[in-house]
Amino acid sequence: PTAESDQKITDQLQSLVTESGWFSSLKIKVKDGVVVLEGSIKSREHLNVFLEAAHRLPSTVAVINKVHVQAPLADNIEP
Image (cartoon, rainbow, N blue to C red; front, side):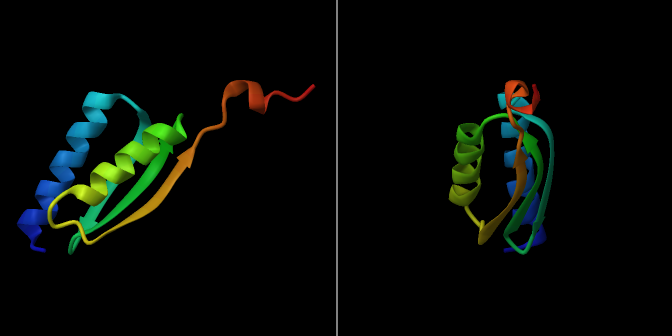
């Protein structure tokens, strides 16, 4: 992997973030083909789709998931 391929991975993932609207916040870092994702998302299913997409990109060596899945509001309410 090169700096150019790292930037291409970043651009493709950022495009998916923008188009999907799934993430309330997400930081994408790519170094030597290793993708590090940090932030939050509301759905585990959306996260799984995003992680699979990241793994399938050419030049991706590994994906480190530091994304937090937000609990639904109803789960945060105490009686």
